[in-house]
Length: 223
Image 1 (cartoon, rainbow, N blue to C red):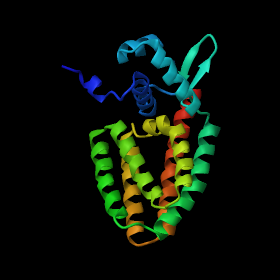
Image 2: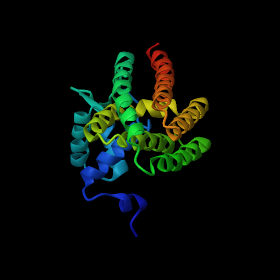
Image 3: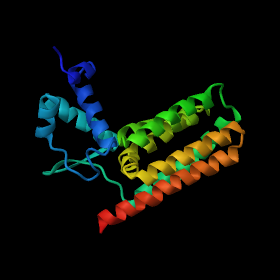
């Protein structure tokens, strides 16, 4: 009988390892700045070092891991300046996407957001950080994709990828989860009323609260 891990495996060992490592990094299981212990991971995933090395090269190209000569691979970490710059660029790009989405809102978008929001709230109530982070991302990209601007969506996605691990750190605290729920509900209300300014304003606050909390985390770790 095959194990649950084997059932989830994609076609190749490299793809399996790549997906599992990406999940461990973006969920915060492997923390920013932490070492990636290849022997332990190869044993955990039941693969040789070859697909693991190939997966790490792919993640290095994505900016999720870094390689230091004679030291090995580490989970990439952002400086406070990096984080603030990424969120500022997100603000500029997402504002355009959201304004277009509100103006051309496809049928069923609000209903889809409400369904996803129920999953966000379920995960928040259970303290399931990984599930909340995944549902939160789906919520935002369901709205952003409604803009009908796929190139813009891809640019925004690359910025999200760079900060997923930090977003998971944000959701470990219950007050932050509750804050995000309130802000999501306010966004949905603005969309129901076709109020693009209110939608943009609430999403600006949503990002600002995350940046403020993550600033504290990064400053504590630096100290």
